[in-house]
Image 1 (cartoon, rainbow, N blue to C red):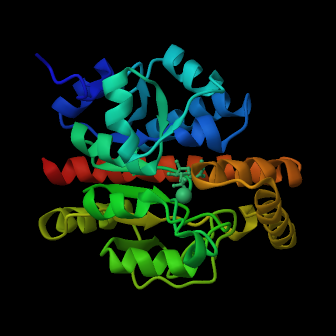
Image 2 (cartoon, rainbow, N blue to C red):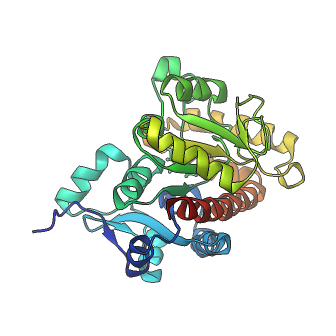
Amino acid sequence: MQNPAAPVLSAEVAEALSAGRPVVALESTLLAHGLPRPANRKAADEVEDAVRAGGAVPATIAVLDGVPHVGLTPAEVDRVCADTELPKLGVRDLPVAAALGRSGATTVSSTALLAARAGIGVFATGGLGGVHRHAGDTFDESADLVALARTSLVVVCAGVKSILDVPATLERLESLSVTVVGYRTLRFPGFYVADSGSPVDWSVDTPAEAARVFAACRELVPGAVVVANPLPVDQQLDADLHDRVITDALAAADAAGARGKDVTPFILGHLHEASAGASLEVNVRLVLRNAELAGQIAVELAALSR
Ligand code: PSU
Ligand code: MN
């Protein structure tokens, strides 16, 4: 009997993987909790299209009725985007959802794990989870960081959200020996803005270089390669608006008593409202850019593997 917790691949993803063609994994928490309805449904299609524009097959990942799905049908994407009760599943939640037949959206941590299990080498998202501000008191550090230390794949992101403690997150990525490279930059991106204010040690200039770093990583290191892809400065969120809405959103989360895994969705929702949609537009734009670059990296990786 097939292991009931084993990921089920869509026909298109299964065919592409068995033929050695490029595939890019996409997460569903971004859709279910990171973007508001109904904009999330449109974004879901646009992100998949951006992966295809990069030359790869998209594989959006979610757990439905206990089954981890790698590659969703349009009806399954509808479900992920419409269900207001869909829980957010990190790595530790996967066994419970699988065993009890539950559904949920996968975060960076659980998407990366399921993608790697399925044999997918490249994953695109918006921003990684990381160390929250005041984590010294709350111990609130995303499970994304430890998961990336254990999971061998490329993650293309625009850094970590500026709601986090970015320097502390970079320190933890170093402690955990997660390889980090800037894409055509030595500045770590700040999600809504091009530069978080922190540097990175290395950069790559082409999708082929990123693929070669990952090929070397696979030989040497158990964890991921984070490719940090900044928005161009002329496409970033206005810096004053950025600082103002982030301060507001953090205060609102505090006042509302948001805790644990509700913190990130709460703050993102508040940001989109407080910036009158400007942060939403920028958020979608950076995810699309990451998806296209991930597609290009997957193409190069497939070429290296042939
Ligand atoms: N980046 C986004 N939007 C999101 C997230 C990241 O642009 O919604 C989600 C990702 O799924 C990430 C999660 O894994 O937030 C981190 O949540 P936490 O801080 O609770 O680990
Ligand atoms: Mn947390």
